[in-house]
View (cartoon, rainbow, N blue to C red):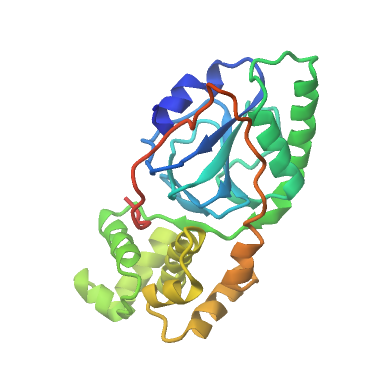
Length: 290
């Protein structure tokens, strides 16, 4: 069975003449992280079930169910998918849609998701005057309108190796409630110097940056089926209500409601005799920055 990266080689979007193509993927058994790679076409990674984490040199984006991350053409990136994840890739040639110049996470409506999945089930080598081309044109128009629904699910990643190690430790041990002063001492810095260091590298205060890491960890856990109580405990919150309050302040909804609204019925994939999942990656590990 080909890996995720192998599936992209087999379905190389840059070799296809069509400006807009799609690919459906189901991680039925295991998970794998693709190595950093680029496409000449822009890529929309749509999470249908489970969660996807996309990493670039600028940061990380978490993609909860029924959402997507947009990766502009030429941006090196790597994707990680949770166990039993279901997703679609939508590839768009440069200049074929008015899309953001930087990565961002978007909330998608049910119509747009259905259209992307339907396109993924059609042959990708369609001509400019075929029905598929008209479907792709309407899809792109709907996608352009979805940009008004950007989600605050971006984690800026510092370039400094020491601070990237701090991010890794915060993700691996989210219940660690060490203060800014304590983190500063670990880096042989004063509290004020460390706080300025984080602000300069990430554009966020240490407190906000740590909350964003917590949100990334929480969304991955919730999308993988963990309960709100379990995620709250893993993040070291004194009470479930405190975790829910943090979550609602960031995303406007409680964790249970947010995830429930995104676990809608998935568009069924065709079950041809020779069809099979595109890849079966390795088992998932907890989210953490590289």
